Image (tube, rainbow, N blue to C red):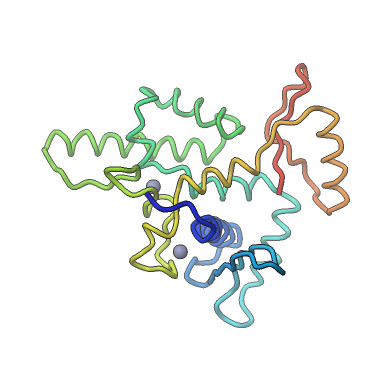
Length: 226
Ligand SMILES: [Zn+2]
Ligand SMILES: [Zn+2]
């Protein structure tokens, strides 16, 4: 296991942001660079993603605009980096795709027919079939995304081809830390709190609801906090 330190958290956050910005703005990850700075007495910690080439595609504008108009899309892209089909295929908590869909939808406050949920579940199911075949054929070498047999993170989730740590990527980022970061974005609040947050969002220029799921009878709302 990696040591849980500020560098690991910030590097993991960099990957989440780097991959989400590339996906949202439709540019290759290769065209973006990222870095992070640990907190100093004068400055808070910071994660930065920028375009490698001058006069690029204006990705920061596209990303900012999407964050304001469709925050759920941003949440989904961030989530895409931590929902790992390799890891899920190993999980013993599900026996059918319907079950896994329901489990993930509930865990991440998204509808079961959400496109990311459907895709990840299909990939996990396909990966499980491959694993079963490999086991039958007695193949030992298969990719794992779960300690202790594998690393905590793999190319199917939080890893990127363009990691600044190259060969040390396994120790520099963590899928589980990414999951914990994503958890911070989702909070369950009361109706009153939800109204306050909605008004704040409007002031900040958000144009669409940040409610992920709502249970009006109980007055509970799952909302995103960016
Ligand atoms: Zn993985
Ligand atoms: Zn990296």
